[in-house]
Length: 146
Image (cartoon, rainbow, N blue to C red; front, side, top):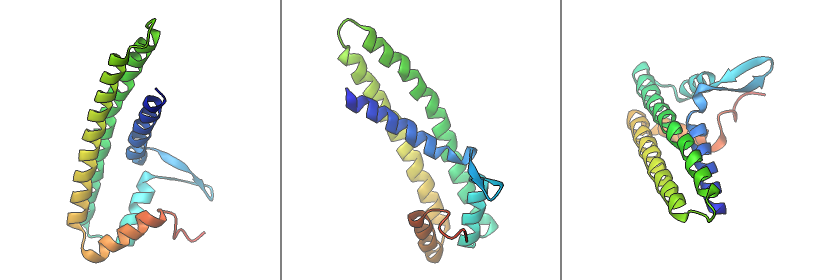
């Protein structure tokens, strides 16, 4: 039972991370920095061409749209969980159906993430791939100069 709640929290967190480009993260020296700023900064550090930038932005936009569409399905499972918990005895089959549904949603998101990663990797040269790997490993603020 506890695993179900942890799995649900992980799925919601994964979708939130995938959508992060739509929101601002916070303040930095009086200015507001969000997903667009981070994206622009990463693309500048990679020294991408306009064509590469378009492919990267389109791939990440597609991933964000997929995550947004799956969000509704995740929210719908709350009522199914509540229904299973309201029963006099725990309805394990209903929870199993919710688990199966979450597995499908995670697989869809994983497939979209792999597709986006493949598109990004395919458009970058070896040097840019190495830089991107370093940025991901260190985090986007590693060279902020603060």
